Image (tube, rainbow, N blue to C red; front, side, top):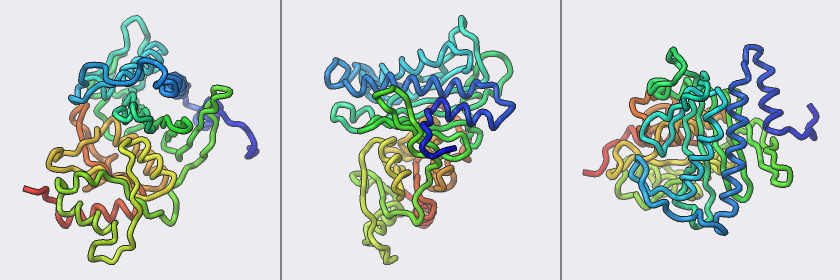
Amino acid sequence: MAESAVITIDRHIMEEERKHPEATGRLSNILTDLGLAAKLIQREVAKAGLVDILGRAGRENVQGEDVQKLDVFAQEVIYNAMDHGGNLCCMVSEEHEDVIPIPEEFPAGDYVLVFDPLDGSSNIDVNVSIGTIFSIYRKLSSGGRGTREDCLQPGRALVVGGYVVYGSSTMLVYSSGAGVHGFTLDPSIGEFLLSHPNIRLPEPPQRYYSVNEAYYQRWSLGQRRLVDTLKGMGDKGTKPFRSRYIGSLVADFHRTLLKGGIFMYPRDTASPRGKLRLLYEAVPMALICEQAGGRASDGEGDILDIVPTDLHQRTPLYLGSREFVDMAEEFLREAPDLPG
């Protein structure tokens, strides 16, 4: 294929589908519908300061967090884009406590959609990059409608993981287990175009770290020693890294994916089991990170090996260049205990 060829996300999906003669086209339909939902969300994000869509919606989600108006909009857009096509058996969202069924008047399919409609929404009012995160699994149960067990699958069972970042440009990045590909939205034609084929974390890895250091005193001794070492203050003579932290997982991971380094959201005394959601945030990012040549860990082992027991289970998260994630695990093993 000529390098100058214009490849839309729909064309890319179709070409990938042709490599699998057994494919039914259902997975392609899901990705196409997600692309449409992302365009609709991007349109509202782009004009958020001009319309009454900024600020809080006046309620909390299942996590006990303030729901933003744009959170509500993104949730409704994704649900309405996905509920009627006959591709999904059910959905689960960070914003809902339980499984979201497909309405009885619509046919049910063989896939499960897990999504965070708008990650980093606390940054909406200050115009910082935010995103949508999604995962797709195959249904395990028999019968037409999905169950809770269909949603509680380990990351190794993931069929597709991806995210959309709404920033200076809008990008959709996904992996179906055969590399990572990024598509940038061309607003002049309303299409996602392949801009980053076969994304790989840089080698040798660039020396960046990303973590909220305001929580330093809450961390384990191992985590504190790790960050001190990354800053060139440890006893291992490590050359200092450069610090980058945005506070929006999609934006922080997107930079790490393209530039290299390590993103960390460790457990601490306020969140001893971790803060980020395993299903909605950690697992899809872990798939992309591994497929790009990196590693994703909870500080003890691979994120994708964790078998979830709850839809809203939380986890520590370390993402990025393999040698840096390995180094983080080494420090954490040496001194894992949180402050008393």
